[in-house]
Length: 123
Figure 1 (tube, one colour):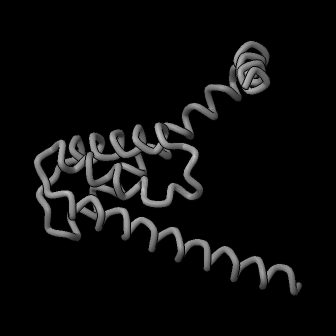
Figure 2 (tube, one colour; figure 1 turned 60 degrees about the vertical axis):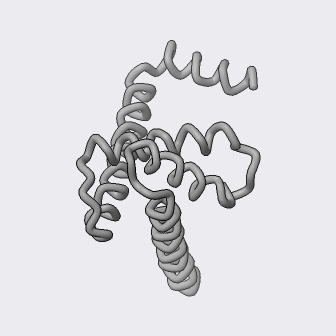
Figure 3 (cartoon, rainbow, N blue to C red; figure 1 turned 90 degrees about the vertical axis):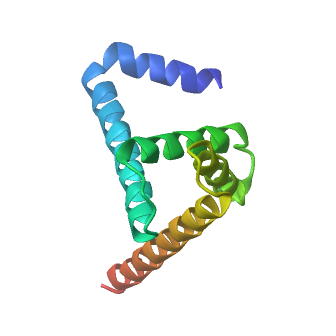
């Protein structure tokens, strides 16, 4: 744990541009994750705005960080999403479905990546 703290401290003190670049890209990734929640809500014909999507994403992320020891966030993502959507007045089933859709997206991109790796490896 101290090693990670030292590395972040070193990055901030000695390579500020890289630190802020990494921070910027982390922020962009979080915003893209909020858009994913927003678009899943639109696909489910649920009336949520981007602020609601941010609340759902933040609540889910907080819950996932609290139970970090579960491999691949098994069940914790869906539970966090269920609790987060309940906090804005939606049924828990919406959060569970959002978690399943997110898992399907991950599986699709994993398959695309594995397929790409097998093509590149052959060459």
